Image 1: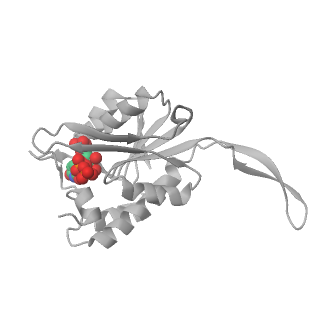
Image 2 (image 1 turned 90 degrees about the vertical axis):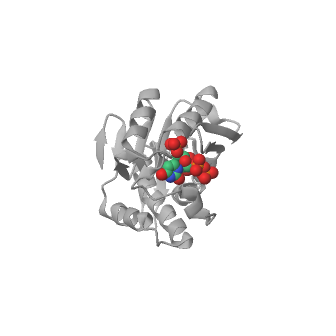
Image 3 (image 1 turned 60 degrees about the vertical axis):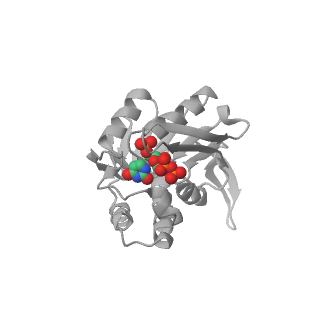
Length: 212
Ligand code: PRP
Ligand code: URA
């Protein structure tokens, strides 16, 4: 994994291979969903690397052992609807005890402005570390809107996990919220006039749910 001032890029060969399959326009919705989930598991493994542990004693069939267990740190995974749903599922396979919140944001197709239409978070969200998930970071309007919504609720530790980010999106999100760690599997150079990442993978929500 490459790291540069709170931006982490996953160069693991398995992740890169699966990202190439995702980009392929001939990949079916079923395969697309499975790949998004698999990549989220692989990325989630690294994103959770700093979960604190505590020592416990376990009785093995042979003797008492000093062992380690997750210290009960409270985590929440929050997909940005719709496309983030595909990533939350993979992340929850790794961390099934995480609570799940939902933030609904869509981009106005004309103005590209991020419009929030839904927000349902765990009651104690301000006590939890949050992993915000969305496959695409394009203009960053949606990610910035979601982070704002969490900051208003006094969430202190936020990580943003996406699959493909534009360089511009990373710059905007990092400038707005340098404390939010950004994890992605690929960085593409361009955005087109419709705010789509080029080459990207197209509309992530439509490809996940077969709506186009
Ligand atoms: C997509 C994607 C992100 C957003 C990224 O959602 O899932 O949320 O665009 O673009 P941005 O960085 O320019 O904000 P979309 O608005 O298409 O909504 P959907 O998931 O409901 O299809
Ligand atoms: N949202 C998508 O789903 N894809 C893009 O390329 C940009 C925003």
